[in-house]
Amino acid sequence: APAPLTLLGLGAMGTALAEAWLAAGHPLTVWNRTAARAEPLAAKGADVAGTAAGAVAANRLVVVCLLDDESVEEALAGAELAGKDVVNLVTSTPGVARARAAWVTGRGARYLDGGIMAVPPMIGVPTAGGYVFYSGSSELFEEHRAVLAAPAGTRYVGEDAGFAALHDVALLSAMYGMFAGVAHAFAVVRGEEVDPAALAPLLSSWLTAMTGSVAATAEQLVAGDYTKGVVSNLAMQVAGVPTFLRTAEEQGVSTELLTPYFDLMKRRLAADARNGAEDLTGVVDLLRA
Ligand code: NDP
Image (tube, rainbow, N blue to C red; front, side, top):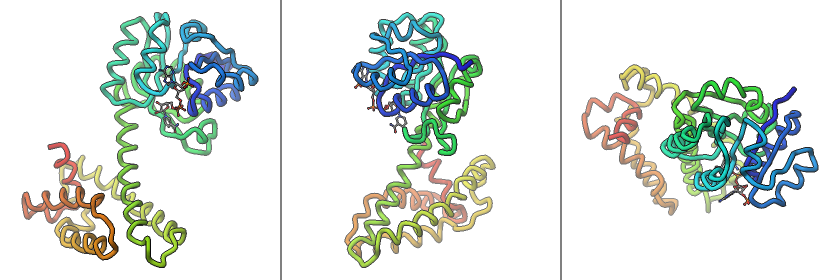
């Protein structure tokens, strides 16, 4: 029979998770600060607890999906955690996750941190490709694997409670780099007779084609050789920078999103002319320095 669990937090994400667990037949106890948000779930079979402490007491497995780390501390402060299995799905930094892990385990519970790689409509939809990074107690993860897998895919990334957040934030940070590039591209064509809707498929297929660079970068980092398999060398790419900056200028577009990256490329080349034979992997080291 599907295992029972408790869920604290019925915001957009918490509600989607709750519906997925109920749909999969898991007995579910929920709590939310604003009680009205639990009503539709009660109608679908959830037990509604009046307090966070009461919800925690109801089941061994306690999933937390509140706004931020402060709200987690606030909600769990009055609860008896000894013997509980706490799964914290709140997006945080690796450091905050490690501190929360110490706080929870110090009160006698096991701890698993999660980083959700999905938006609410992807929850409970196996074909949507959403998943959750998990890190922390591997025993907790193994024991509750089936429950955790009901709303979305699962990827356990290690005993270090900070690793789920580390992976989550790394992926989301790369996403913002992509969003920045897309914003600049649309700005460049804006004002011309280019239909944004016609540019969109060209832009997305170009970005898709360029994702091969991710694996290539990893290979070079692992090999410690940034000239391995170079297709577009850094010297050539730096020589092309003025074309990008002048095009922006001609189009009346700010270069503020482009220049930080171009400056790093130029610094890598300026540090040693031999770096001109690399591609862009040297930027990774400049960021860490
Ligand atoms: P919402 O803003 O929709 O909901 C926030 C929830 O936190 C509500 O249940 C709210 O209760 C509760 N809350 C806020 N402050 C407190 C507090 N001080 N004490 C108790 N409860 C509190 O957020 P989401 O559901 O979208 O997000 C929840 C978590 O999931 C976040 O960490 C977010 O980063 C993560 N996440 C969300 C994604 C998304 O696309 N939505 C994607 C990936 C991760 P109340 O109803 O009373 O206000």
